[in-house]
Length: 157
Image (tube, rainbow, N blue to C red):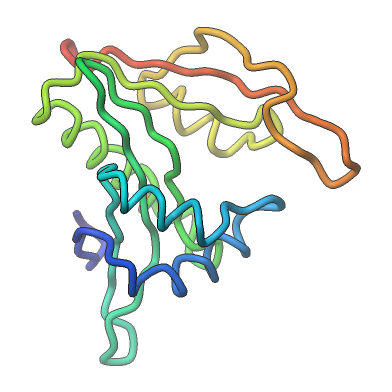
C-alpha cells in the first residue's frame, strides 16, 4: 500500500473509528453490528492506517467475502476527508490481489448509480456492469435506489 499507509487486519477495537468514517461517507451507513458480524463470521476485514500527528489513524477499510472461487467486495471506503488522492484505487487493487492469492477467479460488487466517482473508479479498473439489483439501497426520501452489479475477472488481470 502506498500513500504512507499500512494495511492490517481489522479488530473489534477499530469499529468506533470505522463508524466515524462510515457515517461521513454514506447517507445510510452500515451499523456497528454489521461490522461486528463480519468479523465474527470470518470475512476478510482490513483497515488502512496512516501516521497522522504521531498517531496511527484509520483512513479507510474494506470487507471482503470469498466463497469457492468468487470474491465479493462488501464494503470499501476511504475517509471522505482524503478522497481523490488515489488511495481508494490502491485499496481496490489490494482487494483484488487478496482475491487472487485466495484463488478467487471473479470479483463482484454493488454500487449506487448515483455514486459516479465509485462507478468511474470501478470501470477504470476493468470492472464491467453485469446486472442490477432492483431497490437495493435506501435513499434519503424513503425511496429505494437500484444497485449496479459489477464484476471483474481476476484470472486475466
